[in-house]
Length: 332
Ligand code: TYM
Image 1 (tube, helix red, strand yellow):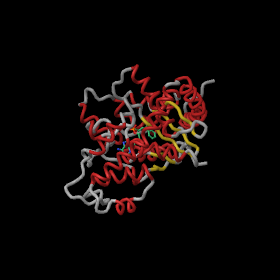
Image 2 (spheres, protein in one colour; image 1 turned 90 degrees about the vertical axis):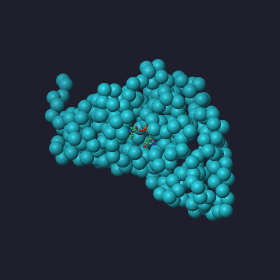
Image 3 (cartoon, helix red, strand yellow; image 1 turned 30 degrees about the vertical axis):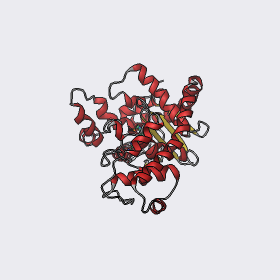
Image 4 (cartoon, protein in one colour; image 1 turned 60 degrees about the horizontal axis):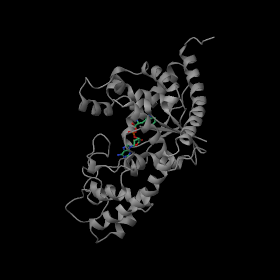
């Protein structure tokens, strides 16, 4: 079976609809056809300040949400990044292979650091994409299911894999991005030109999966559309309406054309009300399952322990090969 790997940050509160539709939904599907490794990237989270207690709680919360979304520990390997020390170890190796200018061109870093100013921006945030490279290469992943915002990091991953393989010896599989075009960029409900995101969206623009469903329904119903009333998919001219259609299709499996036809002559209000209803139907059991997993931390921790063990076996083998090919003296 081909292998996939992906990761998600343990954010405070909950995942948002963009995380789910852009990435996690694909993770669930891919565990049927691929040898799948999925992780909660706590080492990536500490590139910005974190409260220790909250970080621990958010890491469990992330794992609980992934299980609630449909990851099955019997079909995939679910683990926490810091439980597998090889990530930090290969991360260092990749740091030594990356050009400073190359790292400086990462747009996510530029966006994030420009908001913070250089004194509160850590070097960890700067090298964040390089740790991500190590995450992926350790597992010899063939494909990496992510949203559009991760594309540049995957290009860096491919570049560094090729560079290492050429400079030393064939060691790493060069992975392909797995980006589902339709849902690769879910946009902000209030500002449909920017992506839905924890850091950039206003509270009304972002749908958090664990919020009170009624509150999320209200946000969907007050999403920004446009002055015209025609329900048509057109990302350039009608980004707000197109986003709602995308979300509707993804949650229900209905095609865009089918939806456009069904809503012909009806106003935006009808579309929004129906979408809000569909969302509540989907999210209600998701929230319940998340709370069930959270209510049983022993089982949750056992799943993560087993996942870490399986992940380490793979990661250790790759790291050993990389160390050897670089010429690091093996410990006797
Ligand atoms: P993170 O935690 O920011 O996001 C997790 C996943 O959600 C996707 N995503 C979106 N997709 C569509 N529309 C949106 N508005 C939206 N917002 C977020 C992201 O593209 C991502 O797939 N660097 C990664 C975590 C990471 C990783 C890895 C991923 C660390 N190591 C190795 C893959 C492989 C990140 O911060 O994702």
